[in-house]
Image 1 (tube, rainbow, N blue to C red):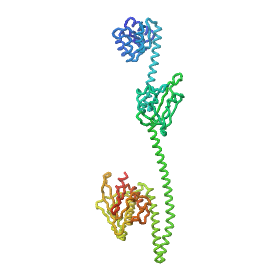
Image 2: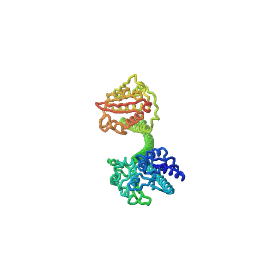
Image 3: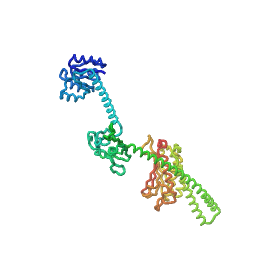
Image 4: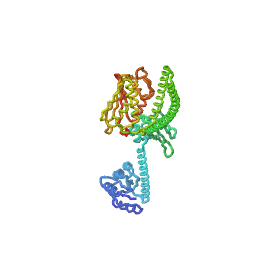
Length: 508
């Protein structure tokens, strides 16, 4: 052990140095004044200081011991002949580890040094443990609040300060009920302070996850907490501690996972329903196609053999109804295939619209001529090719032109125009198609025009025979091609506007 001797009398200091070295201690130097003692304490860092109260200079031993204790945390033992009350009061303020009255025996000195140094090491270890524990409590992510046995707040860590909205210095000594307010999430009724139950019963108390902490500013924080008693060495309850955490993110994670589970279940149900629907449609189509085919064959035979003018008229009606039923079956199957398909099944290819659209339009020329309708194609010669799926796009325009021919009155007009305009995507302008015909749809019917089986109830030119599936099929096909379709109707005209980017660009 390294000891610094501070003594104003040189002979006494030298004697102490020799005696201490003789019994096993190391005394590298001595000091005769307070200033010198502080300087040498900084240089040699002794384990203990033997301090005389009377010293040379302006600083006595008591003041010197105080500065050494404050600056270096080195234990001090006084060696002095002074025993008056005033001196003792000053000495106690410096928290010495021993006080030896001169003259003293060597054994007394040895015992005092050993006890003082042992006490110093124990206190140092205790302070280090306390500091470590305080650091841990301040660093953990949970809020911690402690009280004494009267439910008065004694400690609050930074997390608890943040959650509660109170600083430790503001609430220390206050009753915990003034700062800790917890209610039930569902009933909104106050929940009994868990610290109170801990102090009464001496047991650990945990809260359910339906607890809401009401902060100082009125904010509501879902928490999960646990309270436990604080006991002394005799197992007496001297206080309680509450540890609580903000579980907002935890609850959000649970909600997100629950939504994922629900979505997965919904997807599974939809897949099962789609399978059932597909099986149903396949079965129905097979069961309906067979008798319809037989009926149509019978009609053809009767038409050939001849059954009179009135019978012929009924056969034509029957033929029309068979055609209509077959159209419904075909539309249902087509819609089923489109809904079940993905973009990966498409086959994009460059379509030269100048030639491609002419072939589509020409297939309707005879029909429009028969109904005395005018069919016009407005197409610039410099329209660039459109990369899209030939089969799907042809079905879209066939359905729309078919509707236009069917519902445009005799002598009416049908116009198909194409242009490139609007905002670019990856440097490519969209291709805009507009199909207009001189027939008007009621405004109230426009929002439902693409619904399955929807037919306009008003008696007008749009209420002719229809499956109610054609426009629904068009809408699905447009979505599949990553395009858009809109319909407007006013002033005796109806216009369907379709916009497509190149399929390769739209699906990037």
